[in-house]
Length: 409
Ligand SMILES: Cc1ncc(COP(=O)(O)O)c(C=O)c1O
View: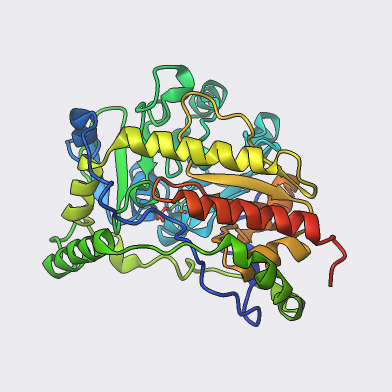
């Protein structure tokens, strides 16, 4: 299981040659006239400023600061989950640290038994363990926190897929981001802001946060203007009535399947830019986070999620990873397991559905990660989707699963 940087082997899906069209619906929320509203303003304020908190331009740079403060670097390793995107590993690579991957069960909970084996295989002291609350669904924290405590490892909660620490309920599961010594969130996944990455500590404020550079006024103005333009624009929805013709036109395109590449990589991924490590993020993004209507975000995301769950309930070749939406969860996306990436992934992409997938991943012998790399799709459920857009996406998914057999060429 253990993979040590610098000989990290990645498996990456390369879509060149597929000619996938641009997504016809936004994957992330875009600023609209409904964005702003009254919410628990004081909670929102404390989540963007304060001595125990730092704002960055992306969560990946917030993670770097968390790793650094834990001692991850040339003499201290990071434990990260086998199912990941590259930006979760990049900050440790940037710090010159070794990484060991720990395995996951099919529900993406850490495999606690294998965790101990992974740890004993490490040749270096492990300083931090990264625990993501995937897709907005809280992990059970106590067992992993106990493991960390027993082994002198600092727990970092990755709340990039969670709306808010403790914002959506008072149950144990609602309190994501409050147990680890550090927690990180990624506001641009939930709020229509151009950037953002938040790091906070649940213990005393660190003696020395890394120095950040001066804010960039030109970017502030550009980002503010972009939001205004978005708020004034009407987003057209794709037409359900055109689905027949769109599906008919697919046949010739489905032969383009891209390729799966194995690469030995010692560097950070192209998504990581070391120049942005000291970037403090935009004041405009912080303002949008503070003034967004949290109740609307939560209720619309939950409604869209439920719409996806019921749309796929009786479909062949696919299943929702988490069909139950408990009271505390505000989902980031709808995770859908498909049995046959070929042809179904390609059909959805060629139709212009915004489909995310973590198909560029460090290799491990964890079956969950190996299966989910190509079979777990991330579909949007954000608050700014219109009823027409949801109808189009769910109708397209139904047609893809019902009309195309796995052997379709
Ligand atoms: C679980 C998780 N952690 C961290 C990140 C990095 O977030 P950001 O894009 O804000 O750097 C991502 C990005 O998708 C993510 O999915």
